[in-house]
Image (tube, rainbow, N blue to C red; front, side, top):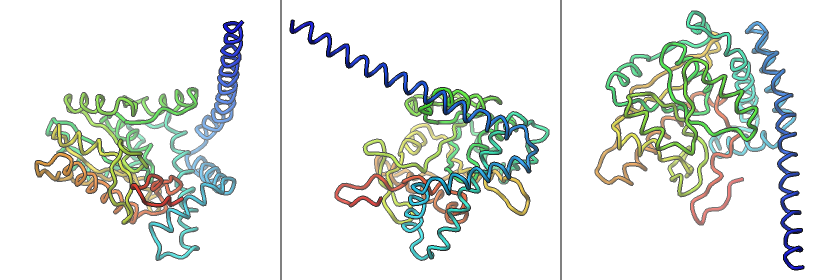
Length: 324
């Protein structure tokens, strides 16, 4: 009797699990069915029209998602307390324009070739990457959610320098497959965040390049607190750890929209001189702070091209109040 009751409970729980799984599959398919024609449709348009439509989509998201606007305004209040509400609002407007423009370019990926990629993305400071790559110890491409980060690795691969890109799988497996196919069509390889250390170590041993977006909120102990706009921000220390262990070059690179030229500029900075005192944990923190300062410098220069809608300061040092 008791066993039978137990089986009923277990069966009911399994039914709930199955229902939730089926519901998720249906939702994922609906999301894909909505996204695919947008991606395909924009991808068939001439580039100026595709960009205009992408920007319109970005601005529609801004209007329809007040929570994203609130997060962005709060972040700007924290980072730029000296700016007025009107100035911050103008930056937020620019952020969604930047996101929409990048959406359009991502939809156009299948049309990029070695012959036409320079019409969309040009190098600046390529010698900084080239000299770092020539060392043969691997390159850690330090970047952020700034400008057109999706174009950074994609254009670089078309120019003949494919790299591995550390990324988190999307929750929707159908969308994840579509995005991965777009990102890797010219030789790039995806490295799942769960394989972060192993993937990076293997790549550095082969002298390869790995792109790392290093400006998202982490949670301790995966992240360590360093200052970003003068506020403690929990930040991934893995890049510094790998760089110190392998002697790979850390080369900052950002793909920024240039309004006057109506194209993106993939700008490489000189390789970062690492701090090495012999105290491993102190060196990891010092270099993570150094990398974060470089990102901050670019965000300050191009505030309307950074992803302010992300809760960058969500994790707080012990004892400090929440900021959101």
